[in-house]
Image 1: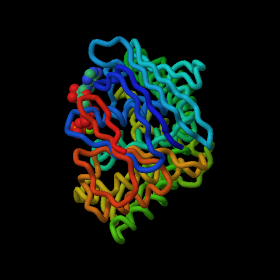
Image 2: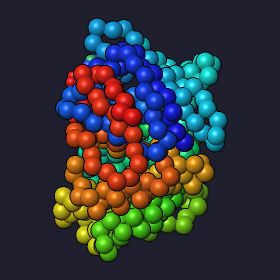
Image 3: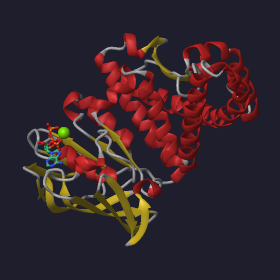
Image 4: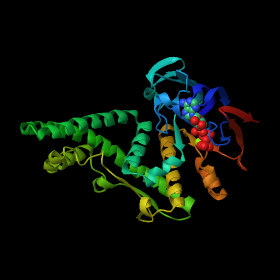
Amino acid sequence: MRVNFLEFKNYRNLHEGTVEFSSGINVIYGENAQGKTNLLEAVWLLTGARSFRGSKDKDLVSFRADYARISGAVEAEGRENEIKITLKDNKRMAEINEINRGVATNIIGFFKAVIFSPEHLSLIKGSPENRRKFIDAAICQMKPVYAVQLVKYNRTLKHRNFLLKSISHSPMLEDTLEIWDKKLAEYASVVIEERIKYTEEISKTAEKFYFEISGGETLKIDYASWEKFKGLTKNEIKEFFVKKLQGSRKEDIAKGITGSGPHRDEINISIDGKPARLFGSQGQQRSAAICLKFSEAQIATKAAKEPPIILLDDILSELDEKRQNQLFKLAGEAQVLITGCIKPVMKLKHKNFFVEKGKIFTEE
Ligand SMILES: Nc1ncnc2c1ncn2[C@@H]1O[C@H](COP(=O)(O)OP(=O)(O)OP(=O)(O)O)[C@@H](O)[C@H]1O
Ligand SMILES: [Mg+2]
């Protein structure tokens, strides 16, 4: 998977321009606040996903402009296609080869990328929600239907929670809870099954990567709440979950909220048997986050037979030369776009782009 060419208009501080990327390593450098991350973000939007910085679509449009547009010539399986993303009225719309595809999330899976930025440290250090989102997003990139199941789960959960709150003043409503328990368990079982499968897979890959980068330490990832249910069928998970909901019904009614389920599950990450969140050093946490992101890329590669592009925002300066080389070795054949403040000294072949005040200068 490659992005060969990018054209942008009114994208944050990137007012208008084009970039021709190389198929190997691309280094984007320049001082702070010049537009380096904005450029990576523009490429990322071609995947159809929302900004990796969590920004609202309307904040991506240049101040004082009323729309933004990004077009990319992307290559997959030897064929080039044009993806166009238009941001307007706080919405993201997509076109492929000039055919309207509606909202941008419809094209997720067409062009794949993985992004690693310093914020991804929250994958290790942050709340469980960060880890659930990471796993969910990774599954969605490979299996877009999973996103639909997640939406159904969350919608049903909202209904059940609403009902739980209503029961406190209308107790006869408790009879209707059973239907919602079954429905919730149906969607929960899909989510749990997919997350268990994915966690097992990423744990294996990340363990290998981390072993190399750290020189012998052991990284493990477990879908904690369901660790002992590994190998259960979807139906068995569903039955177990219904029982769990029934068991906690009194408590759920008292609190007016569903106390357990995929929206509460934790994914444990440990280094040499200790929770990385609590005991990992900065370097260990950073390496673990990188290994997770690279594993995500490698798993996506297996399913797609072609590596996704790798976007690395501001991480070179954090790593010594040995680790940098190790990192590029892990990237293998993938196209890499990497940002940093200083022009890197790098033995590997690469193309440099200098960014200043939203303008991108190619250095041949
Ligand atoms: N909607 C917008 N319209 C215009 N400018 C914007 C918009 N959103 C953000 N910017 C500006 O874009 C500038 C560059 O941001 P960017 O995050 O790309 O910098 P950077 O080169 O990655 O810097 P750093 O090295 O500090 O990470 C910021 O100064 C910001 O004010
Ligand atoms: Mg930046």
